Amino acid sequence: MAVNALGTMQACELARRTGARVVVASTSECYGDPLEHPQRETYWGNVNPLGARACYDESKRYAEAYLTSAVRVNAIDGRLVRIFNTYGPRLRPGDGRVIPNFCLSALKGEALTIFGNGGQTRSFCYVDDLIEGIYRLATRPGLAGQVVNIGNPDELTIRELAQIVSELAGAELRTRNRPLPADDPTRRRPDIALARALLDWEPRVSLRDGLLATLAYFRES
Ligand code: UDP
Figure (tube, rainbow, N blue to C red):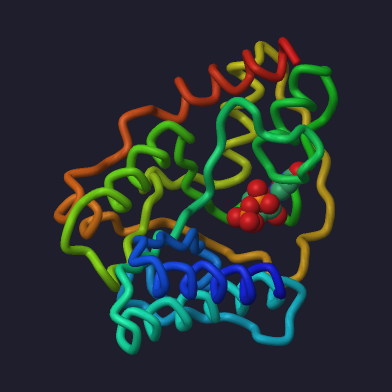
């Protein structure tokens, strides 16, 4: 919480003093377990402020409130990107997220661990697409105070993801189930109409191509 809160305050203060532009990396976690689907930037979210994910979600929401206030009060040129699930080569193997976990298990011929029944959905964006979106948001003029979703609207269940990763790794699908973590969102999918309109941006890399590149990385590392 301190990193997100104090880090954003320091960055905004630096922008105020120097006139620099600042882009805060926010998150789809601001939408919590969303009641609106897909999620548009205008949706206020459904976040549990006391739950296991609250330290992350609420500090990112604080960062958003701080930045938009600094744009209003101090007239800084600040922008917000709400980043949805992202993956690609150079993910940390042990970071616990679903794509590195599934890739490593499939390559080792181990069972893939599915939390809950695997019916929850996510939408995965390849890292190169994400970077292009952030670059455009950071460099286009006239976007002070703007918040934009960057993510891939191609939504699938975690069960379907397990199937695809196993197939691309050339492994037979084997899974085991573990309990669903607390407050695990049931679905996530960005509405990217605003990114299309403001940034002429949309993802270009398909899930299969992105997963093949990611598997190749984990195979070599
Ligand atoms: N998940 C899973 N097995 C794993 C890691 C994650 O089934 O080994 C599930 C997790 O419960 C969640 C989804 O995959 O529903 C995405 O999890 P991740 O941590 O990658 O991202 P986030 O929940 O932050 O969107």
